[in-house]
Length: 150
Image 1 (cartoon, helix red, strand yellow):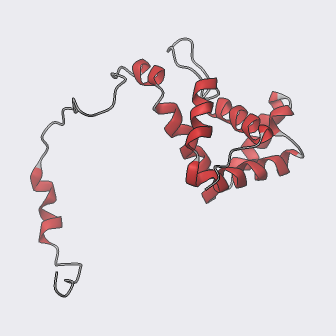
Image 2: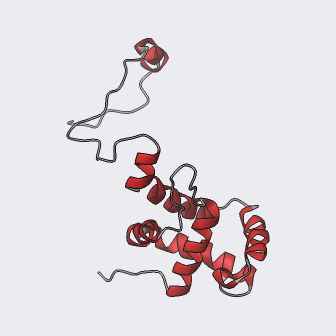
């Protein structure tokens, strides 16, 4: 199986768009989503979402009449707002890719006051809640059928 990657223009447009979506904040000590490490993570983890990401970026390029990253910032803002005005699956996928990679970056996790580590083996403390909230679910009739012989 051959791994596919974004073209150079697609990668530049993705980085530009990510930086517009989440700009850096020196005040909070947060990098922007256009940070090289974060955008490298995006490209490495697109995986099954590659076609949706390409579709979303192609729509933006068609609206821009060429590479989005080559436009002046004021024009980028106008076109990005017009492009985001209509919600569609490819755009939602692109947003998710950007957000998941941004919020798993160790610098971002630390800036949010969390320890930058996997949740296991140490685990995370989960406060006990009100288990009676599940009573309506438990009271529901069975919503499945049993498998013969199982």
